[in-house]
Length: 385
Image (cartoon, rainbow, N blue to C red):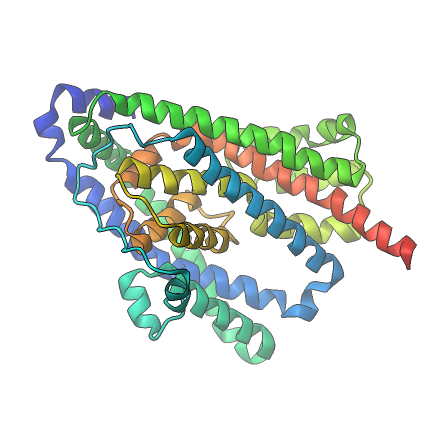
């Protein structure tokens, strides 16, 4: 990141000619979005086996996850909006931006969510339409179960291939980030670095607020002593911070639940589900990135568009915990759908290493806080019965 910024300041004309590197990288990222969503969504929904497959603990977990992720997205939006992040950054994209979508009423936006043709949606990169169709495929596959197993196995293979393609494409990330930041700095004022630094600081602050307020409140409701919880989750927290992988911290998270005395019947369902459906740290970051990029490019989404952006992030953040740079792939699809400047993705990727450890650690704290709360909910309903 720093090298690209210095290069952009010293050699602005040369920096302006490096846009093709970022363009190639972004094209490859966009190409994998459709197959990846197909694989992840179809396998996740089909494996759940429909409503009966989740059970009472599963449904209670889903209610809790939806509340926490909604709060996380709202906090990310609020951090950018009320701190006015990006508005005075002077971040003029080096590459031509997509035209922002015209303001439309919420009814029109909701109608356009549903695809007339999945192939047309894939070609246009309309992530909402892609999501809706593949969700329906997953639900149908879960309903017919055995007959759908060939498709589910195929989807699992597509997921694995998409992971590997993403890993290969990420080899281009350093060059793409260098080119994007150099071009951005060359075409912008020196406020660029200060603005990005402010974004990083705000991101850390938002994650800390969520950790203290929402996860803290969950522990209070669960009647979980803070000292015991902190002692138990120290290991998964450190694993997440060091590896920036929620999945890598899962074994330690399960051990922590055992140490806290949570029933295996509960944490065996809640913690793995949380790994896919309760990525609160990522939700905060996704909302901040989307609205920061819009404001930096001078785009002002209407209230209805802001709602749809948050809804899209809520849906696309599910089930991608094991994907390398999953947040970046989600944003690539979102930017394409809502006309946000795609070249800003590489700029945001340049500062991602400063935020990723904190974001992932908050994800894991959310996973660990879920089981005690669901255990308290279950014990309360059992006594009532």
